Length: 189
Image 1 (cartoon, rainbow, N blue to C red):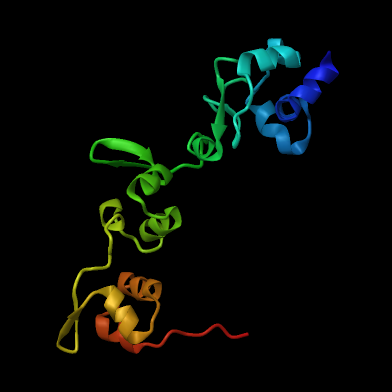
Image 2 (cartoon, rainbow, N blue to C red):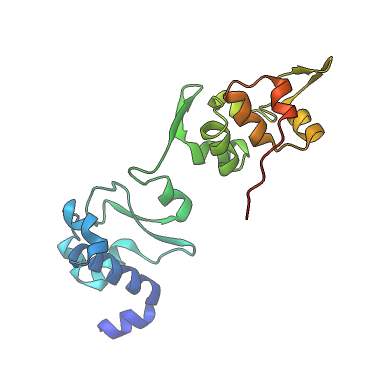
């Protein structure tokens, strides 16, 4: 009977075998599961019971523990896509509260239609607040250079200096003259 289940549900069988191995193995890479005493429900020692509880895994999904510190049980597991799983990680997410709503930075990026890496970079590298970072052109403040007003984006285009270099220089306290006139050092090979 075990062989027929294995053939009928090959993907689910591999997932079942892997989750049991993660919890029962003494392999170095699985020490997280042992340190946190994460276990598999005794009912799931049978693949048949696992399939009865979880059903067929939808395309693009894998098993996810709702409580990342909880055990592999019917009540704590679900089939989830990579996005949902990434937002369910315990220590790897940045949470932002904006307009009385708290969610991960990845969720905000998706909701606002901004690439995650762009939003993350604006906050961490450019030092913008979340409200500034979500603007269409967060660098739209006007700066005066040679009697004209320019945004940082315009100064970047005009000078040929990458926007991130300009932002870095601005955060270092450089004045606009120095930012524009100091050439960018090229990496020596």
